[in-house]
Image (cartoon, rainbow, N blue to C red; front, top):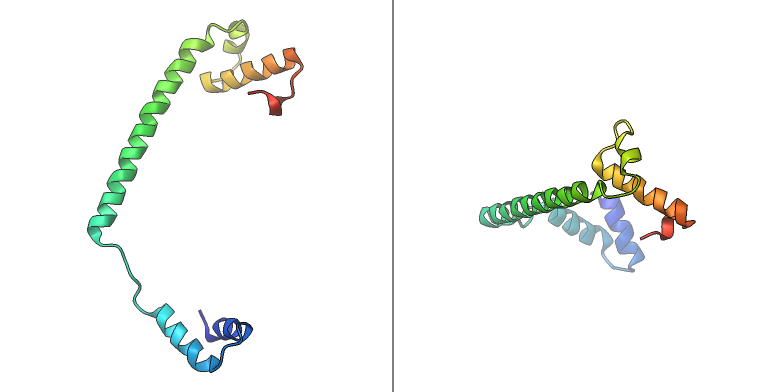
Length: 110
């Protein structure tokens, strides 16, 4: 960051010795910053990987439940024969068909 925006901020804050303070702030911003130890970074990565694996497992279970229940719907035959319509998208189509039949607005359908 250049001296100009730092000086402008100090001026707006009604500070004295703007040039000197701006130079000190600029030097601090350009200096060495605090970092996390490598152990903390490694632990963070391990936690994020574990979280990702758990979410993937839960997504697969949810997809299995959707696949198991999609065939029970009265419109299952109609939905199944639509080209390139996967199971998840088929569930959305089924929900939309239901809302149209019931005269509900798509935004208010749970």
